[in-house]
Length: 247
Image 1: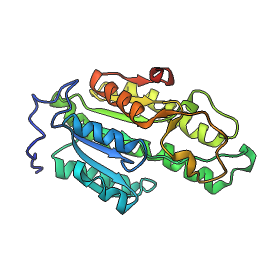
Image 2: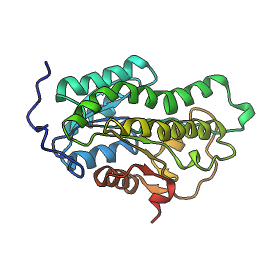
Image 3: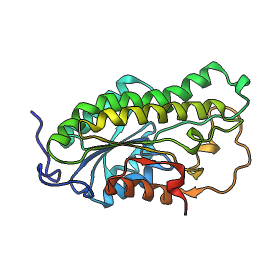
């Protein structure tokens, strides 16, 4: 039997618009966008479980909540993240997937191992996470807690870019999956938000797994994008196209 820790509240607390006491798993919390999202969720009263692949960067997040070292490219890493959140927080009310890798270069020159990592991290990992978390989110819905799941994609899912064909395809595949799955999850009371922000200054483009980033215009700040995503969570929104981040 799971013991609900102090702070998560009962079934009457934490409905739409209220994150206080909600158990939220942030996957990729050590990243340039994951950190501000985690901070904003914490500030709103959420009880956090956060994952990353770097011990030192995870340690810096420990004041915000429980941290778990996992590799989301592995199915057992996804299972560990979900199981830890459920066991230690007494359940799961929300999931935010903001891990990711990027690659640049001509489509015909992208090596197979790069293709595999792009799709494993950016597409397969959030799909696995959705499957692993669904049962727990349905339980949250049965308690009237308005569970949510957010997948952070990118504008290239809508507007594929030359020199980023493989990355664009991985993000577009996730967007298509999300749009179809959201209709199914809605029946169980789970809200799935596919967020596709324009270019954002997270530092991801400075560390590609292949190729070199082209000259890019200045992007949105990570905090501005994080604030828009958390607003969507609390406002009951169901989709965040790139145009939702304008201004």
